[in-house]
Image (tube, rainbow, N blue to C red; front, side, top):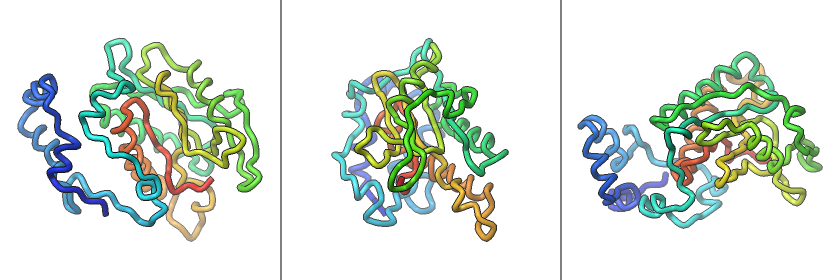
Length: 252
């Protein structure tokens, strides 16, 4: 478990900016109590410690410089919604394998969660598209033998699909991704200046885990949505513009 002291959490989460202080003062007592629970995480609390299962987990395997709220607030890449750009669009790409009729249910869960997490923004689903409709470059990985799509092409496709009122557009797919020929795979890729993101999602729904002796597709789907949501939150807090739905345990 990754645990931090209240002092460290206050440095990371609390701001002295006057406009933010004034905004915070307008919250109800219940709303302030909810937010302040983030300073006191624990196993029985709303906000829990981050679980690390092995040295190959993302956080220990990819050490990064900590980011406090002040540096996040001043980040030039931080994007603020406006009245004319206040909708997050989610674009599903390709088949979702054995998810079957549950696919729409899972994606709707994701939409509802994003709507709740990004309070004040609208989150909408664009009509699903096939891989062929994207016109993207693809390959068959020589190691995994998986079909993979070039992320740069997908980002360009998303750019053309992006509605005028979009705060950002996010592509999600069950198909493997790669950023260039020399890479084995990639979890996802974003264009921060164009508000685009492509990610592989719901990886626990892949066929090997949908066997007769295992849990049902609904049980796997629910667990995977929860896992995707947990991982998504980490990068959302850092970039704000992009939704991350990938599974760091995926190995190509």
